[in-house]
Length: 81
Image 1 (tube, rainbow, N blue to C red):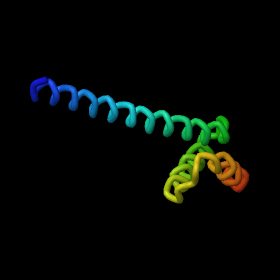
Image 2: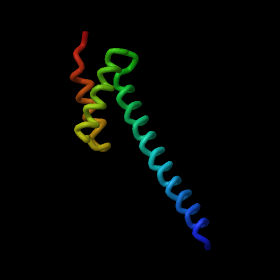
Image 3: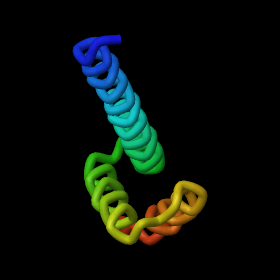
């Protein structure tokens, strides 16, 4: 094979890996966001609160396994108005 063919294969392979990684990250963010919003119901104020708590969980590097319980505790600590 000539060097141009090898370069094309390399570029296509790296692009494919990057796209799959990007897609995985986006889907994971959507799933976590949906989880947080599902705990808030239709209350717009609580939705904002839960999205803030989700960002806090991401900063604290809460694992996926612990995220549901962590968000449940945050939802139960929401001040009722």
